[in-house]
Length: 302
Image 1 (cartoon, rainbow, N blue to C red):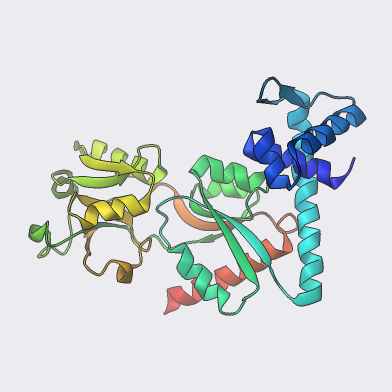
Image 2 (image 1 turned 135 degrees about the vertical axis):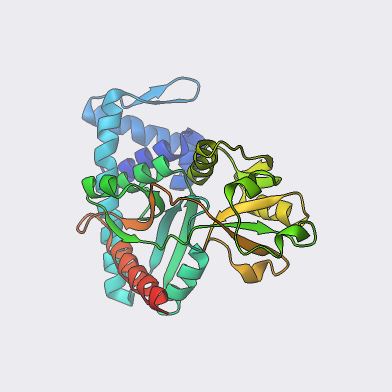
């Protein structure tokens, strides 16, 4: 057994396809299949359900995969530690972020990057449940999203709470001039508007739907999408208005648009920056978490 076999196994879990797992491992598909079969022979266990295509892992494979994630995570952490000893902090940080968080991630990365130029970032958008799973399995190093803090404490994650600024309605004054004179909006006023909203499966959308339903109202989305870019384009052309967490958008990117606060009860979950417990987080992730927490704390006092 060697580390490459375990990396191939983890890549197969992520890609769920032998060909894509081989590409992610920088080997041919026959090589990847052979190395995984050799691992099964050595362990005397069937790890993978094979048909014409990848059909998931056996019960034994799931158990072995759990160990493989841990070992690969430690191995990657060791490599980063060695590199940092040779040339200072550097490497690629994997960040999992929920759509429509109450923070602009690129602004945070830019703020940290000014003093940590050796860092690169790979960002994936994931749901709330996927983010907890990704952090637990070490498929991401850092998580940003809305969480139940009791769950994070049970899993022994480190967290830095993000400020909950509330919810804004974003609109184009050319198409909705009646909103320009308002300093805030209530639920009844928003329910009367055409809206551009994230899909109902997203946590932020579920939070909005629940609040309006409890108020005896219903939202009227004219455009639903997982893409924030598509939603903002819909707002820009006057298709509808958007509801977003305050702090998520960079206003200077869309100077034609305006925002108005919505009077709404706070979320049951809380926004936070999250990393694994000390000792399990990679040196790179731990250093980023410390630097990000310090930068965010400084921004809150400005």
